[in-house]
Length: 224
Image (cartoon, rainbow, N blue to C red; front, side, top):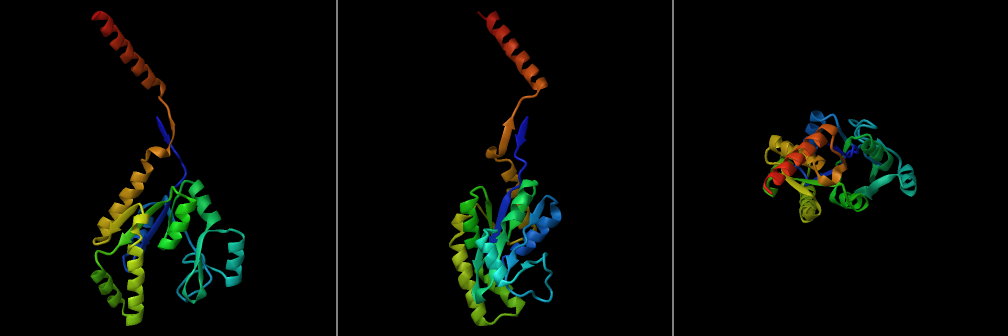
């Protein structure tokens, strides 16, 4: 029998703006009880609609920097306007040890940091079918000016140029198909040979094997 490692997989899902990665992740979480999304820390102010501990763990800049000094993050980054974002190390490792697959929704820079520390991490990049479609989705939001849209496009092109650092790329031109592809990736990762912890043959199988070997031996002797 094959006994595979019980530890969960660390999965990073990144994607260009308006690629729908958030929607893909929500569907995965709804469909699979053994898959969880890591909640990140941030030093930015909490929005009225957000819930502390659900959307993010909201802490002060000083507390975030103390956590950096203590090595509490798998990865972290300081983005525009000086706000910090980081992935908690202790919580993620505990979830993995419990057998849960943990999804991190982070950008390409954070993905590189974690891949260097944990080479077995599975990296999935979600893309919109075209930049024209990205433009359409941004325009549908209607909450950004032209300079913000241009900035998003520049970031998106930079991210696309780094997809060779990822294990898988999924084009989200059909949501259900994109979800099915990501689910297939998660299943295939469980079947990797390097996940085998122990390979043993049960007694019944050993008996059958011995009987077959005896039969082959007898047949060989009859032909001599």
